[in-house]
Amino acid sequence: MIQNPIRKVLSLIERHQVRALLMGGQACILYGGAEFSRDIDFAILASEENLNQLKTCLDELDAEVIAVPPFSLEYLERGHAIHFRCRTPEAAGLRVDVMTKLRGVDDFGRLWERRKSIASDDGTEFQLLSLPDLVKAKKTQRDKDWPMIRRLLEADYFAGRDQATRSRREFWLLELRTPELLVEAATAHSEIAKALGAFRPLLKFASIGDASLLTEALLSEEREEREADREYWRPLKAELEQLRRDRLKA
Image (cartoon, rainbow, N blue to C red; front, top):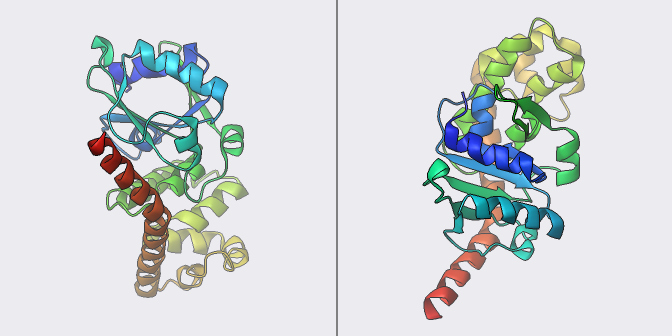
């Protein structure tokens, strides 16, 4: 169920035709991987026209920037997130975060082509990152994201394992993080697992049912992604710290 403040934001995004894709906790709720989130996060198209449409939407929400960097195309294109807090009564206190670049994820045009469209019970239509793109976007250094990835994949696997396309089976084999389910999927789809072994070497452990080696390989895979995310954000965090210092001096 979509909370009323979230519904307010989504309806304005649709009304003003903002090219925005729901991601983060709210998208995880809709994919069955989370129960509650107090924020709303979007990947947006980085263009002057789209940012003007988004600004109109944010003005109606009486939203203000609550941290560095400022709201500009320049910072979005460098990979920063812009953070807003809504003050309109219908969404008071709700935080809205927008980004246009995500580590390890395709550009917005490709994300838009693969998006998932959902219509709410009141007819509001909104756009989400596809599940594969959402999973990639959640591979961060944050502790909370990895259990979420696991739940998202488990929910998708249990919902579709009896009647799945080849591409969906490939997705599970490349992304599942639950050892028991990876063993099950690799056993059920052994030819696909063998073909994907070059892209995900740990599938060899899933194929022979070695849960111990598979568990260790999954942890190693996670550590590598966390470190890659830290390296990606290192220069961006340094830039934010400089912006904070400059603000204090002003």
